[in-house]
Image 1 (cartoon, rainbow, N blue to C red):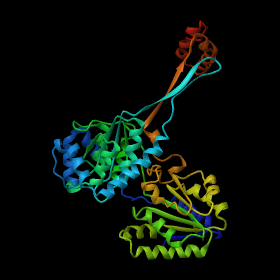
Image 2: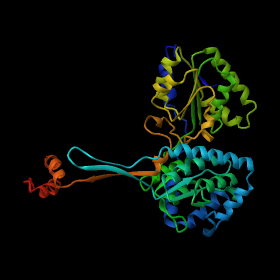
Image 3: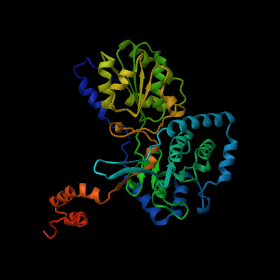
Image 4: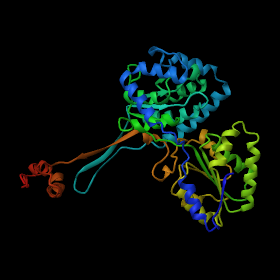
Length: 437
């Protein structure tokens, strides 16, 4: 059974603290295995990729077949149903419109001392996008990762996707072609991350890696960080629904299960101010679990990690609880969601009102569905155009400007014992400096 908590109970604080800190990810330590895979790819390049594809994906390849060519991608697109392609185009257009508004502006200004200051934005030169393959094939993730990179101006966008047994979802390739992928490779797992980070003869290295994956992919991204940038180390999916009793219990139940069906380690939580409504939602969840195709996964998630929290006052109590949980997805299924949303600091994305289920955000709302998990919404944001850009500061001083600000810099440099720093300024201003201490 999902956990049941009430803010009226004396032990609520301890029970809620346990819910917040409970570990949901698998306990298996894959770090050593991933380190070996990365070392092999760094040492042997394409040969290691071919070997690992045979071992993990039951796929016999040669180095010249690692790439997915333009003809293959075009053929895959033709094999897709027209209604699926139309939906893909509809989603892509909405994602494009939303993310174009994120493009930042360069800025320059002259301050009171006459120093010209500013910043400029430039796109990362090469980005790798990891796309899950096999049963976990998500063309929507291709759109969410690639479109912001293209809008940012990234000239080289590389996709890697595992093809177990040689199979690849044709809609994934159609999404890649439409979104703006410039290169694609049939490589998956930690070995794909290693190839993107360090390069092989066939796959030149990139500067940043984004995209979801299993525990091996997540650990590989963790290990290569520093050699390349990464978007995040994503954990299992999460949804927190704040709902009053005016909702249809079945609607809320299916919203909770929409994330539970992702992964047995996913988490779905309901906060409500009505105990009877909470009971109705729990019953509706049980009923839906008798019919959902992914009921085994969703049921395990709900039983192990689900929770129902009953509070006295939604507006008064929910925001603080939400902030402590810092959920990936937050649904506010209440008559007036704005005050609660305004009071919440930590959430990856907020879905406001009874007719805004989280699932619409996974596909066609427009904002990115790559969001912070494992309470990282406390300090990070969802994927966006900014993640594919770098900001560089600009400083221009003439003699008068340096004369206005330089003496203070000399004093600070000398206070820190960095005499060459002080002299590099003082020498331009004909000032005495304490070099030689």
